Length: 301
Image 1: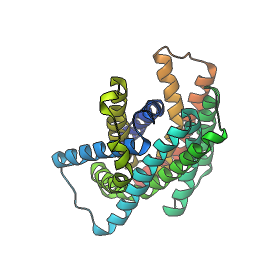
Image 2 (image 1 turned 45 degrees about the horizontal axis):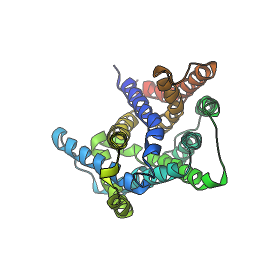
Image 3 (image 1 turned 120 degrees about the vertical axis):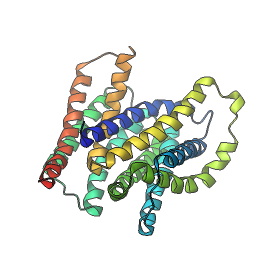
Image 4 (image 1 turned 90 degrees about the horizontal axis):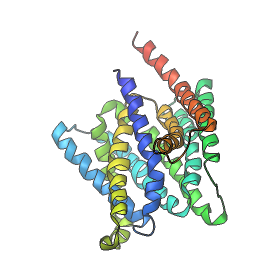
């Protein structure tokens, strides 16, 4: 099994977790936990896990010149990203959120071309268009969509969240080339936690644990362990061997994954819309990653 195949598998696994998270996180807020309080819980829980694991597998010394990039990665990839996502999701719908997040690959492509000088090729443009079309086609046929005035603030937060995550995917990439994934992610979460703690502490202290149903507690555990710890670790592991634009285009797989899970659980049925959407999404992923494959082969000669 090649490193690049493992990287693609890791990114797909992370997006499987993210695809399920929209509905699970929405059920927690705001009745049981505030968005900022939930953000503090997930960042603190994942931070402890990342640092605990790093002690067992060994640590690396960080060059002083790399700390500004780590701080920015923590700010955009953890603090701003997670707070805006959960707060926005509490104001809007999971369908609206998934639609808005499809702008992420476009933002990553543009930012990576400016910051990392990644070349924008026609294959990448066509791949992003194909993946976006497949994801959008599936979302638009998944239920009622509402962009009414009361959800505007939530939709705006989701857009800013997508932008923040795009910046993160680009600026953290050079660190992945230099360090192990666990080294990068533990520092990224530490700096993110420093920002999140004073903002989310008040909502965290207001949680009434005695009135929280078991199902909601399990949902919180899922958000902390799966969506935060495992998904971030999988994403940053894949980013070590894939370009930022390739990682970002996998976001189109989230509505597809959600539909597949629903079909498996007999809560939905397989339709031609789902089949065509799935094909388009994975064609998009293939086209965006193709130039990277060629570059890797040429570099090895």
